[in-house]
Length: 305
Image (cartoon, rainbow, N blue to C red; front, top):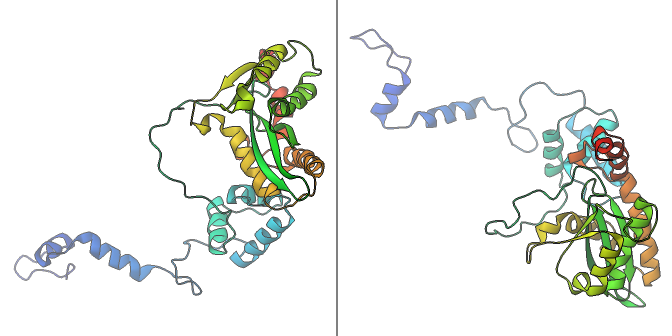
């Protein structure tokens, strides 16, 4: 009707005038026109992707994604990490295509919906420009078959998200909580003596082990600045919290251990595997060990030194 001509004026009626007379919205007409031109997938009935197909079909790409996930030493890798590893393997595709296929094939990592929060107490950034400027430390618990509950303590670098220390013990006291810090200081500062780690800050929560006098005095002895997060604001210690989630998903929730010593050895092995194999999107899909190596040799590091 909109393309018809008026007999009196010899002009086209137009879509705007026809919609006004009939009392319908033009957006409705446009939507109906679009539905008639959409190409649907024959299997799902959903709108198909426009444009030419790539050299790799969806079925072949899904097979490569499944193989990559099966070969990975980690559990729950997201579509970004999968996309990066596909590129390393010579498969060129888009992130959104990988995300769509993983969603359709139920291959995405499970996520928690969470709940709404009020205004954030931390509006700043806790990520540092270089390694060994701030470490985050935190703890969790797990169960062993023969010895019952075990405490797990970790320490994570805020610069490159590297695990600098990890420990398991039967007790969760302040001396056991210090062990990941001790490991990191020995490895990255070349010794363990007074004021050896000046310039380093340690972010921790308000747990009794971390606020204990012995813990704080040890930090002072090493020259480390204590940096407690705000009360009831775990995002202030987000690096350690995020690593503990990875640790649970890839080790503590998928394996069982007879003794605490067996758990401790598995934690040390996971630390080495994680630092050398886990890739980080915000660092250009590099591993924590690679990021440390590159940042230490960067102009920023030379200026800071």
